[in-house]
Length: 247
Image (cartoon, rainbow, N blue to C red; front, top):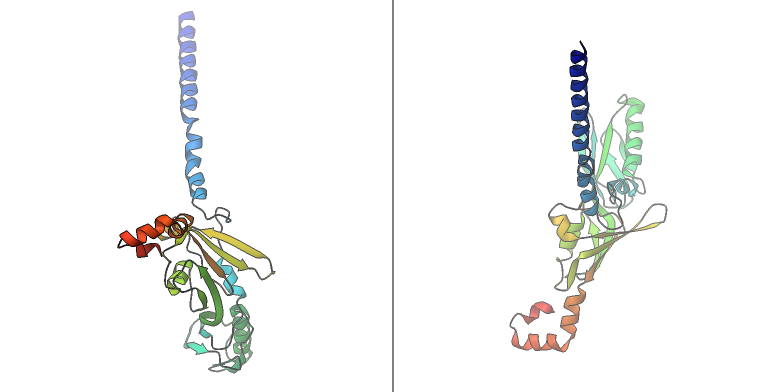
């Protein structure tokens, strides 16, 4: 009888030892599981917290201007869907409604105005969508190491990559790891974001949308600038047929 109890006690000790070993083997796996989160945060642009970016919500604050092209649709009413241009007086003309003042309104405000007019006599609880297809009155500025710095209109959903392309692409002296985006929020506060265009091109960083009054500055490469401005740069320009690339 005593031998039986001793055998059961021995099995219990072996089981506890096995459980302890299993728990120890699983414990180091916790830091490894969190590693992808840390790596992801390292790929985010400077000045932006992980999981955030210059938000497309800023587009909701865009005020409709003269000559903007709007796309208006009403759910279940295919005949109502159309693209309309805001005229020089800031008005749009829509079927079943007539003319509406759109100047200075956001897309959301215009949606509500159209819905109110339709619900007066024509439709019950209409679902209206207004999309600013071409924001002709919106502008952005790009300067620094680009081919054609200047002020450009925003047409459609413009991203940082497309904005640089509109300016003729990067200049020979560009440092694409240091592209700054300056933005003024509706509250009047300013924000600064830093992007690495090579990371955007491979999908490691988001390609942010450009909104009205954004300013993009592409830094000059200090190394290339130092070579160009040095005597060594002049010598390269004389003897190297590709020296023009440094200009």
